Length: 359
Image (cartoon, rainbow, N blue to C red; front, side, top):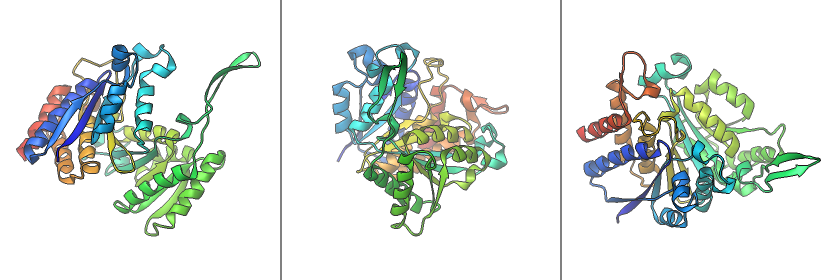
């Protein structure tokens, strides 16, 4: 049966990196004789400009019908002053919630060829392989009430951080199951000494842990976790945490790998249908200049093959092709170091295609 991928290029560098990921997809289809079709739709600022909505109903319908979604990037200064409910980011949040994409997987893996590009000493990050599991559809980003109001003669902004036991339990189960396939170590990050909502988080994680006795469980306050990520990051294997903390920690972990331009992510529902996207933003300052790093988008495609299409062989081939290109010394500007060869976005994509088809 044919499988369909919906491409959502979005804004800024999104269209450029998605184009390169699609090139790699077509190469994978050729090499592995895959029965995969693609469709494309508008999202974010591009969708707002065309339809007045950051997530048009047509796009949402296509997303629900697709087997997986490959997402580029959204947002930019152009849309910062429009009505908050119409901003590009609201389209992505609505897409995640409408599709029930509650489990966000963000690997932070250091390719050995990029050890010198990390902001930390090579001996601190060499061999780094962390998986951050972030709850994606709850917490302070979705909690009610929220808003702005007048109070005692001044403006007050307010948001609500809320998690139900069932929300915590389902993300914890995902994290434990992934930990079983890796190093059997799970660190749950909270702020239980201050926030009651994360006190519940810790209690539920400990309860779920009873079903996974072979996994070593630890707990860490988020401020300490942020410090430990730059002090001794290799102590972590799988990290599970809530929406807000996961957003921050995964970006911090990204810089350990040399560039956020290298990091993919997956957002999964209960059936492992997923939306796959780079962890970086839309980078409007370099959009359209052939400067973007497409490797995170390409590695997001690899995650799509592994988790939604259950083709670990295809995923591994794509990842091997990326490593081969890095081994050749090819670098986009964000990961360039002296002695390597600087290339543009399209040349990097072409090189990955060549490496994938050469196997």
